[in-house]
Image (cartoon, rainbow, N blue to C red; front, side):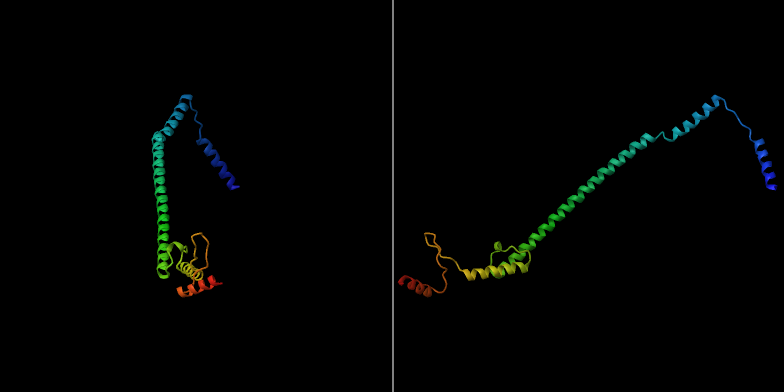
Length: 162
C-alpha cells in the first residue's frame, strides 16, 4: 500500500512538471532543415571518397593481376627447368650405359640406369645370338655366317659338293 501512494505521488509530480510545448510550422520546418543540413554535411565528401575507393580498388586489382602473371610465369619456368633437368639426367644415364656396354644411345629408351642396363644386355644378347644376315645382290637373305673363315669355307664346300 505504501508503494502505491509513492507511485501516485511521483506520477502527479511528473505530470505537473511536463508541459507540452507546441511548435509553429515555421519552427518545425527550421528544426527539420537543421537536421537535414547536419546529415548532409556528414556526406559532403562522399563522392570524393567513393572516387578514391574506386581508384584504390583498380590499383589493387592491377597489382593483383601483375602478381598473378608473375606467379604463373614463375611456375611455367619452374616446370620447364624441371623438365630440362630430367631430360639431362636421362641423357647422362643413357650415355653412361652406352659407354659401359657399347650399345648406341639411340637404342636405349629407359629412364633409369637399371632400365637402360637391362635394355643394353638384351640388345647385346640378341646381337650375339642372331649375327648379321648375308644378302646377295639379288636381295635374298642367306644363312647367318658363324665361325672362322676356314669353317665357313668347309661349310660352303659341303653344300656345293652335294
